[in-house]
Image: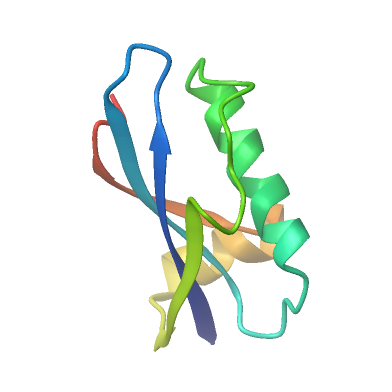
Length: 87
């Protein structure tokens, strides 16, 4: 499966920045749905209410994905790759 990768930088409540990628099926056309997935992830990390719009989250590229990632996307609609400041 090919996935669309959205490069995301969100300011945290403490002023630092979270950098993560949101991966969705390349057939997911709605950017608002991608942002909704990002907001769900932020809520899981205790960062609910932080901005997540086109300013913070941008389409990066299409990539071939590992089966493990495909399975998660099939189950929940998205997969997060944590890059920096996500702990």
